[in-house]
Image 1: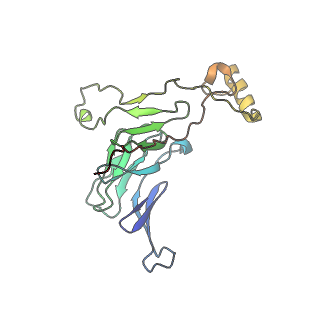
Image 2: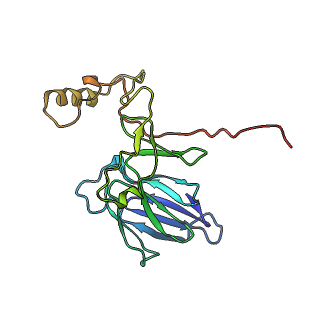
Image 3: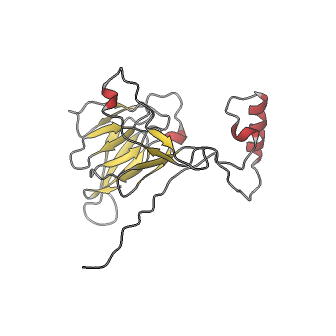
Length: 216
């Protein structure tokens, strides 16, 4: 993501800022700005690493970070700010002040915003999800059981039908058999079918159509 003359790159466990100061096409400056994504875990969930930075309507950069990995994130440029435990939440930062914070998360890939700033994500088997609101204020009250803010809005539901034309991969056939037989752990998806439904949805795209009208 380009911001304030530099390029912010997510490279777990870091967010690194690159800057080309003499305009020769090479970045002379390389500095780690944030670190801690996925750190401290015995096994890193590669399907839930930080991804998909997007500009929000608040002029901050938002990214998905809560797809299964935890980690205490801190800003190396702002040691005065306390580190924050992700705990399944998404992450935002301000490239001007390098302030940062957390927001409702839990999706895996392909975060996208519509014209009104509403957030859409997806996960492996559920290809379209919507955040009804951010639960930041509700979380202040530990005694209030706030409803799930990330909701599936796929008309055809999770594990919806897809129409592949390539043959099933041998590893997928074997894995499905082993899961059904209880040889290996894992969900038996699609009612035991090997394929033909979403198992790896990896992004949402919102096409923004701007209203048109007569010119003044």
